[in-house]
Length: 225
Image (tube, rainbow, N blue to C red):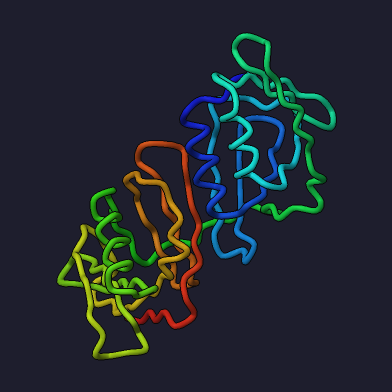
């Protein structure tokens, strides 16, 4: 089996969410952060023949980079990674899935109160602003029929603020201030349909791929009508 560039990019992203991962038999891949406040799932182009655990996903990705066009051959306790010539190979052992952090159930997204579109350009602007200003929070509020994303320090009313309006919808007259930690925004650079529930859960569904993220909101978030 060879892993596509798309799958490798997903694995690199998932390594930023959780350093270990459990692969399930089939073509569905899931991960969850150690704090269990970020969860993601997607469908792979490949179908895995069995379930197995990888303790250090970044190390595994580095192993794959040791050979050109890595070919994977699965055994019960390990995978053999070979090159295109058959001359080089690495024997990489699996870890016990019970020792790793993995999603134990699917997340059912509640009916959202707020929805908006977050394109790649806006996503990058928000992340850059957070880095430049040194803030770790994104405030999501109504803005004259649109939705405003603001990079803020909610503990300092005099702190500098970056804001940008995006296309969105919410109940007429709704008043809300959902707070998202920038450090939890570990998504790939794609365009997303974002849904937010007053139960303090957000859903990011990619417009370009099967990737889907569920990100918990901060408890300081507020919603009212």
